[in-house]
Image 1 (cartoon, rainbow, N blue to C red):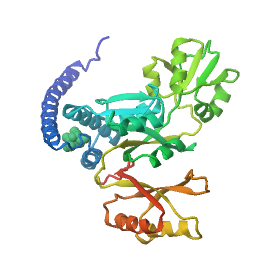
Image 2 (image 1 turned 90 degrees about the horizontal axis):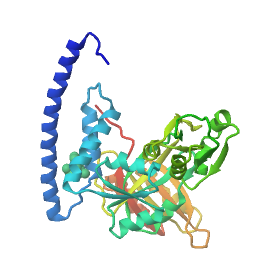
Image 3 (image 1 turned 135 degrees about the horizontal axis):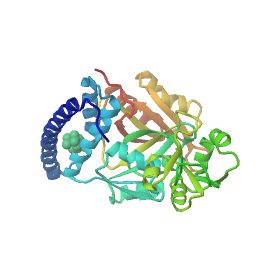
Image 4 (image 1 turned 180 degrees about the vertical axis):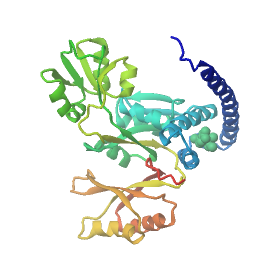
Length: 366
Ligand SMILES: C=C(O[C@@H]1C=C(C(=O)O)C=C[C@H]1O)C(=O)O
C-alpha cells in the first residue's frame, strides 16, 4: 500500500514518535528500577507488594493533571499496565478467579491488576476464597452483584464465614456479544450460554435470532468453548472469551440493558490504607427486637456517613435471624466512620468489618 503524498510530513512525525518512544523507554525503565528498590524495602519487612490504595492515588494524580488528548480511560489503561509491570519486578502477584478461562471474572482481574499477574481460574467462589486463606494465592476476584440480577449470595455467605478482607472492587460493564467461528449467523443451529446471559439478551435473540435453538450451559465460557469446536454453535460471551476461544463477533452489545454492570470484589489477607475516595463494607446482625435495625443505622445518620448499599441475608441460624451487609462511603480510619463503627459495636450482636478499599468510581478533581 502506498502512503499518501504527505509522506514527507508522515516520516517526520514518525521520527518524532520514535524519539519520544526512546525517551519513554528510558523513563519507564527508571520507574521500574525505583519499583524494584521499593520491592527490596518491602521484602525486608514482609510488606505487601500490591498496594491498591497507592495505585488508585497514582491514577487519580495523573487524571487530575491530565490535559489530553488522552482521556481518563486511556490514562487508566496505560498506567495500570505500567504499574502492573513495575509491580511484577517486585514479585508477581497471584490471583484466583471464578473460572473457567474467558469469564467476566477474568476480565475483572486484568482490569484491577493489569496483565503482569499470575491469574488462575478456579471452579467455585468458595475455592477462590480458600486459596487465599490457605496462602496459595495472594488475592481472589469474585462477583458480588449485578445491576439487573442482584446479589451473588455465595460470595456474601463466603465473606461471613471467612476472615478475608476486601481490598478492592471492580465495576465491569457487561457487554455480551454473539460469537461464532465465522462471525456470520449462516449455518448456526444452536446458541449456547449461561441462563443469565440468555435472559439478559432475550429481546435481541427474539428479534435477530428467532427460531434458533437456545441451550443453557454452565458458563458463557463453556458456550464459547463449544462454539470453538462446532461451527453450528454460537455463544453469548464477552471480549475475553472471544479472544480465548478465537471466535468472531456476529454482533456486539446484544444485552437488552445497555447499562448492565457487574461488581466484583478483590479479596485478600491485607488491610488497605485510605486512598482519598474509599468505601467500607461490613456485615452485622442485630437482636430480634423492635427498633433494632433503626438503632443499627442511627450512628451513620448521626455521623453523616453515606450508605451505598444495605442488603439482608438469612444468618443461617434457623431462627429467622438476618445478617445485614452494609457498604458506606469513607475509610474505617476516617474520624466520622470510626465513630459510627464504634457506636455500631454497641447495638449489634455480631459485627465484622469486611474491609475498606478504593472506590471504583472516583471523583477526580483537576
Ligand atoms: C511501587 C510500589 O509497588 C506497587 C507498584 C506501584 C507502582 O508501580 O506505582 C504502586 C503500588 C504497588 O502496588 C509501591 O508500593 O509504591
